[in-house]
Image 1 (cartoon, rainbow, N blue to C red):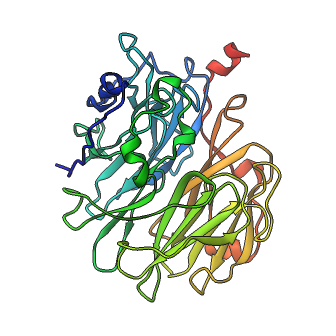
Image 2 (image 1 turned 90 degrees about the horizontal axis):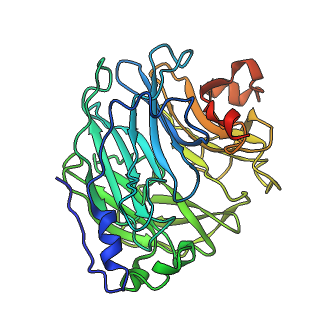
Amino acid sequence: MAVIFFYAATSSAQYTTDYASETPIINSNPLPKYSLDSLDYSMTIGIERTAKGRIWGAWVAGGDNEDAFFVLATSDNQGKIWSSPRMVIDPHDTKLPEKRRALVGTLWLDPLNRLWLFFDQALTYFDGRAGNWYTICENPDADNPTWSAPQRIWHGATLNKPAILKDGTWALPVSLWDRKKIKSDLFKTSYQELDSLRGAHLFTSVDSGKTWIRQGKVTFPSPQFDEHHITELTDGRLWMTARTAIGMHQSFSSDKGKTWSKPEFYMPHIGSRHVIKRLKSGKLLLIKHGELNEKTRTRSKMYAYLSDDEGKTWYGKLSIDERRGISYPDGFEDPKGNIFISYDRNRDTDGQILMVKFTEKDIVNQKVIDIKDRIVIAQPRGLDKKQ
């Protein structure tokens, strides 16, 4: 059981937001209702590889709004063929006074080879609190995978995978969005008692995820959902990088996340998710839009870089996709050193969830991923009806 932090709601919307605390339902038999023929939107959540090599992919259907819900599919042949949706979390209920959605999350394989799905739940687009939930699949390679009853960790949302620190501690990024993300008038004054806690948090677990403890947080300038990564550097410090409206920013902690340095500008980046990941070689992987010193005008030019000096400098430049409308990379490295990255393309029109595979050598050689090597994880066929 997770440690759950509850803060009493004092606004007039309390009776409504209580619905956001109801335990979500796992739907392991989503067909035919949630077939690709019936879906008309795709925004990537990410991918993860199991111990036996199955790849799980997750994405958001419905929209980047209060209609959002989660869809998961699998591949047992390195992504060549993908299943129909195998699991869905759709918290909508027409009996509720407001729409209840699941919009933000991530897939992660823990050191015990259990597959975690982190996801948030809120009313409307954002009700001022939301809730960060998880469900665990202990048999992700089975013919009929089973998922645990969802547990609520805290408020907010987790968009990027946890990190495992050198001492075995699990480090989970959690963001509690600022009040500007509240779009519904019903919630404009809700949860003001949480205002001092809004920002990019670090939660840790020393008992394999049974309990989570909130450490410190960073309040980044011009925040854009934070979407932060936690990286442990070779000198023992923790490095947090985050998305802001004025580029990628960074902060450091020397006490395992309890306190953080004043956030500072790191590099130009358009408002979108980035990846910074420690590879098995010890190098760091960076995936961003554009050249290292470029802020692209659109979500285009997705490149991969390497660093040998803990993110001080980067080299190589593998071109994942140059087109417009690509965003939100996520991925993993397999035991052979192959790097798999998923992303989405034109969520409202093409609705493609794509995946590519490459190596460190490919980055050094500045390879350009050919269009024939981009694998389609999912593309909702309901888009044809929509258009």
